[in-house]
Image (cartoon, rainbow, N blue to C red):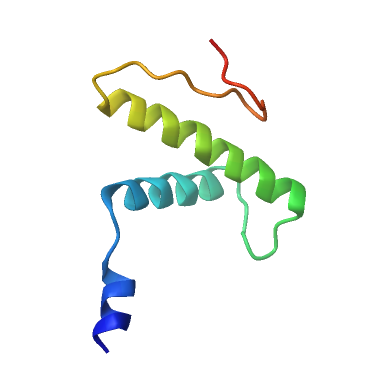
Length: 76
């Protein structure tokens, strides 16, 4: 039971931030993850990644470049 409790209660601040952004993007664009097409899922995942990176960069004292939307390289 202890292992299961840890699994369901042990999440970091970064995990909570990522899920908060993820669910807000799903709501904002009216996407139900279980019914979403692969294209819709890719769109939501990419929006979540960008917004997550922006939020973590705001909290960081060091400016960090963020990879653009669906880019494979970091935009300067």
